[in-house]
Amino acid sequence: MAKRPDTAVIAAAIALLAGTAGGYAISELARTGHIADLEKEIVRLKESAQQPLPVDAPSDEEASAAIAKSGRSIRISECKPREAVPGVTCTGIITTTSSSFTGSAQPGVLSFARIDGAWAQIQ
Image 1: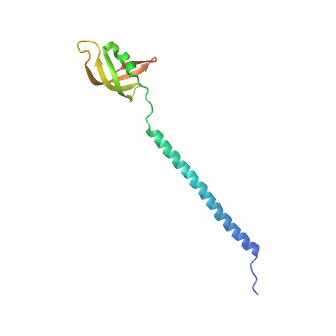
Image 2: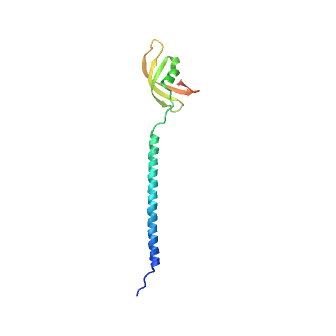
Image 3: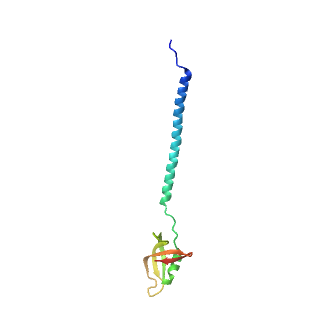
């Protein structure tokens, strides 16, 4: 009669294989969950990077006060940060408030910066 292998060795081998496979499956599930979390974070960061930062810009009244000495006022349509220097460049409708051209309006671009807490026109 042939001798049968020891059942304890077979049971141990089966348990080792089952444990290894189970550990791999659990590890893969954890890894998949972690990857999903990272992908969500990437999407969130991309969305927040695409939203423009709020620009510190003068209101129509503040900008008009800054250029009042020149006999003009402005109704701002858009302001963008200046590239190399502090301040903003604003586009809008500039209206003459004094001189023989009082009331004439035309589109224009002016630059402003906050100096000592007040907006001033800059070149």
